[in-house]
Length: 283
Ligand SMILES: NC(=O)c1ccc[n+]([C@@H]2O[C@H](COP(=O)([O-])OP(=O)(O)OC[C@H]3O[C@@H](n4cnc5c(N)ncnc54)[C@H](O)[C@@H]3O)[C@@H](O)[C@H]2O)c1
Image 1 (cartoon, rainbow, N blue to C red):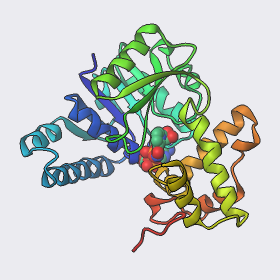
Image 2 (image 1 turned 60 degrees about the vertical axis):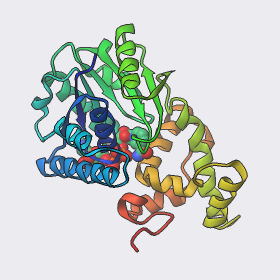
Image 3 (image 1 turned 180 degrees about the vertical axis):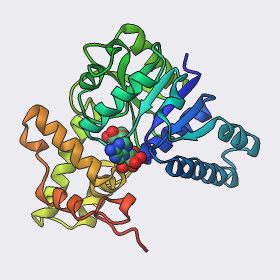
Image 4 (image 1 turned 60 degrees about the horizontal axis):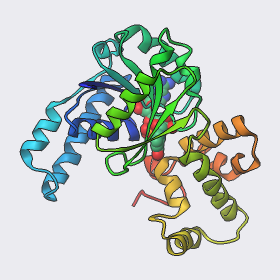
């Protein structure tokens, strides 16, 4: 059973996972490269919980209990006693490999090291450690507190016990786990990203406007948001990294990122996180 969780990465997903786990009664240690970012994340979590109290979704005592379970650090060694460490840093294989090397040295031997990667090969991370049988993927969705699915990713190297513990952790957090082999994109992103990529292509070729593409998929398929709004939510840099990893693995033209997506990332138009993407969030 996971009593103490380490989270590495203080971006969109790291903070969401912290909220999910702390609400499930797990002690959470958040690690960011800078103490300031880690502290800012805990502060932001406090504000988000305050809003939930104002809306009557959480009572004040619960908020205090949840917050008391979360601490922030910049030091990887502060994760030494965690039962599970779930990394959620930038979608870049070299960065994640380097982090796994460090985690393997810093965290107790019996702990599981997991990745929240959307597409990257989990086995590559397992193989840079001395504990490949205790490495797997635990892929949550955005926004983590609201989305019920967790993909448990089983690399060739993972033991049955690791997969069972990962599944148990997801269930203890109130999520619905599914299991999937270690293939780029797992289930959801392998099916979702050709659709999102083709929506950008449709915009690029002038087939329809941004608003009409999004309205069509909401009204015609009953999706809660259109594909271009969803790309802004996911982050265009993360989306591009996902498409590149999918294309790398399968060489399917549907996964080849449309040029305008790459250009937007180069220009720093990353979606909600940079306040501009397909939509403008600056106002
Ligand atoms: N955004 C989504 O919808 C979503 C959903 C599920 C999973 N994921 C996965 O979660 C992970 C994080 O995504 P995110 O959306 O939270 O990204 P983000 O851009 O919001 O945050 C990325 C984090 O990585 C850190 N980082 C950047 N470069 C680093 C480096 N060189 N070394 C260590 N840390 C570094 C940043 O400081 C930041 O804390 C990725 O693997 C992504 O594929 C994202």
